[in-house]
Amino acid sequence: MARRPSLKWPLIIKPLIFHLLALLLAFFVLLMVLVRVDSGGYYTIQTFAPIAANAVHRDANGNLYVQHTAELAEALKTAPGAWFIAEDERGHHVTFGNVPPAYASLVGLLDGIPFGDLRGRERGDGLAVVVRQHTGPAGKLTIMAHGEVDSLTWQMALAAHIITVPIFLVLALVTIVLTPMIVRRALAGVERIAAEAGKISANRRGVRLTATAVPVEIAPLVDAVNDALERLDEGHERQRRFIAAAAHELRTPIAILQVKLDAADDATSHSLALEVTRLATLAEQLLDLHRMDDAGPKETLNLARVAKRVVADLAPLLIQSERTVAVSVEQHYPVLGEAGAIERVISNLVLNAAEHGGRNVIVRVQGSCLEVEDDGPGIPVSERERVFEPFQRLRPRQSGAGLGLNLVQQVVERHGGRITILDAPGGGALIRIEFPPHPGANPSAE
Image 1 (cartoon, helix red, strand yellow):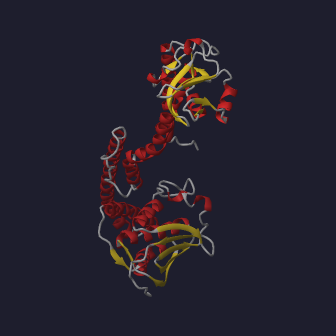
Image 2: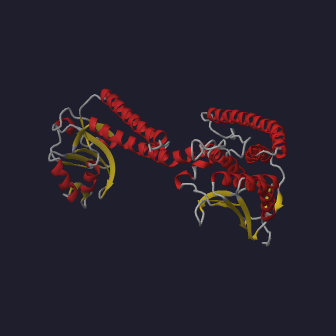
């Protein structure tokens, strides 16, 4: 079975990938623009200025001097050519390292320059400096320092990463967390109409899917399904009217034929009486299905009495065909149903057993269960589901239209019952119908 596609991929994963690609593209464009704007050169990393301020101390006379600290020693390992000028607000100053002549003239004049950045042309020319004001052991100082240098391109790349990575993480978090919630809320209407569609069956017509509160993209699909359901209902209604009309039309000629066969004395006419009775039963069952579709009234039935009444009516026909039929009744429960429809179910099963089974037929009532048993060849296990399909016969040359068991099954299911085919204890077929017992009814004996 092919794996069903998920909306997580197009609605979550794909946007996340596009966000990443867009951010990367924006990063490179920004980097290229900054590099293009930049005039080049090297600059000093500003972390050396506070190290220099912490290394400057003041003696008893107020003069400044440099004390080698561990931080300063570590910085000199990275930048051996580092130097700085430190100056306080009163004009005291101190220098460290080889101050280039270009900056030597500024000694004693830094107090008026609180902040500054100057680049060098080459990495090792010592001209890249920063000017910062920091507070150290000697108090507030203005520091001009040259330490570890770097190019602006790498610094801009780092800055771009610092900017884009948090933005991407926030977008990814929002996409992963909020998108499923948004999708779930957006598709809530789809889940509802899916539940509605699952309740549609052949016995529940006139149902339509709710088109409101579904996404506008899915609304055409819902409308198309509703239109299809309407066409199916119209076609089913036409079929019902045709079957009902055909069954009504068949009743009159069947009744006339039955009267003529009953009045005839010859053996051939009597042999046809069983087939005519079967035909009449099928026509009436078609009408039963039509009536039950219209949700006709149901009554509390005594299965034992219904079975005895049917067997009493069929017994003369079966005796003429050299067959026997008997009724066995044990403790039983009343059931809810239509007496005429259930009578024709029993009649159909008895006639079917008499024609395709053996010589002896037993109708058994027990609880809310009804069984029709014969001593014929039985029905193979492989055919027991197929015989309920319309126009199906066990043997090609078998008489009948193949509708009997199909109509019986439909009537039983409309009563909420279940029909199964089993092996009779002594051989032959046993057809069992299980009706739901009438709620609150007490068992009775017949």
